[in-house]
Image 1 (cartoon, each protein chain N blue to C red):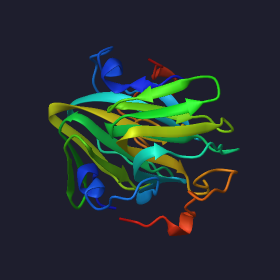
Image 2: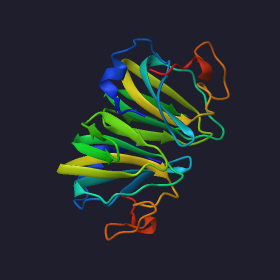
Image 3: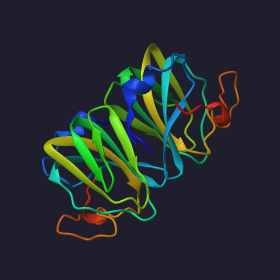
Image 4: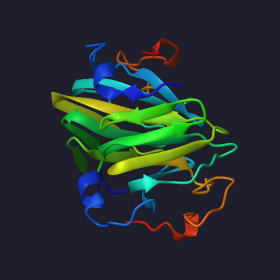
Length: 121
Length: 121
């Protein structure tokens, strides 16, 4: 594996809510994504999901509160917890989640991107 | 779990090569550490290890090359690969590694910090 320079990766794409693979870590993938607007409510029954904001601002809505993330802040959505990421003015994020994780969890929506359609960049 | 503001965590300690726990992600811990000088050569037989530099500069020496990391750059040391982290002028880093990972891998040295001695902050 080579090192990953996050700024270089984010310069390579503009589509939002469409994670790209940049590395593997044990049974997880390391991904980068751009966010703008809202992703659908969903949960992952057996998988924690790591969010680190690199640029912009991301609100992770949970059913009982909102986790508000600026650059240099991270949050792990615990397995089974419903969440809805919202980035009104845009955000660039690093995601780490098991290789088995489905994009929108147990809920397939028009925004769902299958893992086989998440490219390496 | 609460969100983790990395700058707040790094403000809480000054010791180097002594990882602190800030989160759990599936079978991994998320840790922060300050680095200054060199850690001993070691490897982890069955575990990949994630390094993200937040501040400063970290050189990860491998036997055949050096991975040179500035802020916003990350690298996964693959399982079984010998490595020696060097931060001549200091660095602040995020580590993610399996809960079972030993600090200096299969090599116990004077720098080794047992997992039970790695505190939550």
